[in-house]
Image 1 (tube, one colour):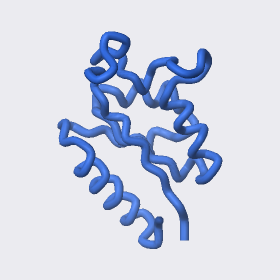
Image 2 (image 1 turned 180 degrees about the vertical axis):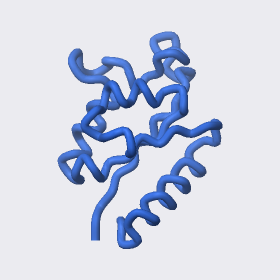
Image 3 (image 1 turned 90 degrees about the horizontal axis):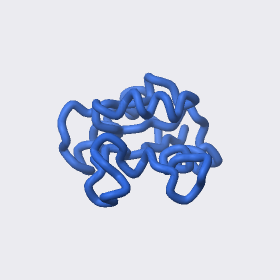
Image 4 (image 1 turned 90 degrees about the vertical axis):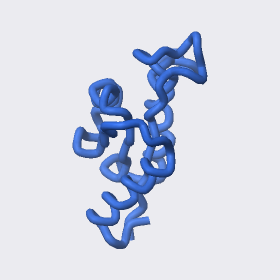
Length: 107
């Protein structure tokens, strides 16, 4: 049995405007820490519970290189670019199906 974590990072910079923008949404901003972005802090918190190889990031295709730069320890294979914006439920379903295929006993 292995525990996995999924970070949903597909936001497009609309809810935290004007600080966040479509080019630089809130997950890539230094809001509560001057050295670590929101997504880096999220990964830091999760790494206390699951190994870095068990963390997956679901994001819009346009942000995959941003994620790779900010979270190199996660690995490119764990960064899942979504070709279309379909909101939370489809992103969770896709990640769940992928992880179940990798490890049928995953939690």
